[in-house]
Length: 232
Image (cartoon, rainbow, N blue to C red; front, side, top):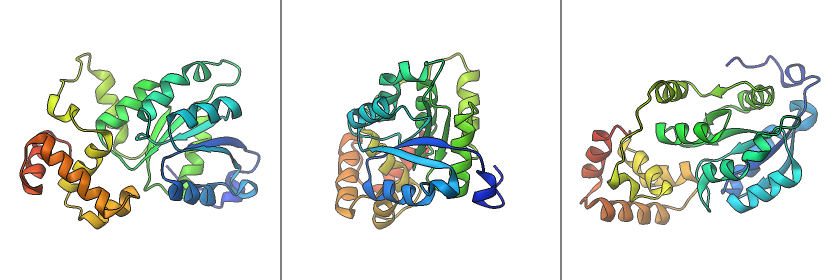
């Protein structure tokens, strides 16, 4: 994805109405500040939501062209938002299109929201300029992915076999899976807290819950467990 030479020239004549859905207020504020300078970017943030119910209400009321959707949300996650907004996505005259924007780069998260109807998936490491460009691509009906994530989708849709059910993994909540992957990648608790916009104490609680549910003793066993399942 190439960066525009300047935001003003790259977005001249373009305009997209956007709803931002993420359960972290600080992150929403940061994204709003980065992309919401409408005169420069062409992006107008017309609504925000922090959970599934709020998201469906705001999206239905504002009918944006693009929704920036976090994967992990209270009330059922991004997939539930997509399910409940299916009629809006199918509207031939004014379709609402979804672009997943998440800290997670796990294959199961990417595939889940794409199967649910999202037009693309980018991670929160994306630059402001690239995010603006991605919004306009999705508005035009194109598919957009962060590097390497497109391969997950191609592999998933090329296979006719249903993915195997992992009963151990299914015991974990979406947030616990997120913490599990970061622990397995060697992140310290403080780094995980910063990455996920949660407190260190909350990270510790999630790790304890994961260890208990998986019947593991420490983070080294947890790392081996995650690596064996190719979750890292």
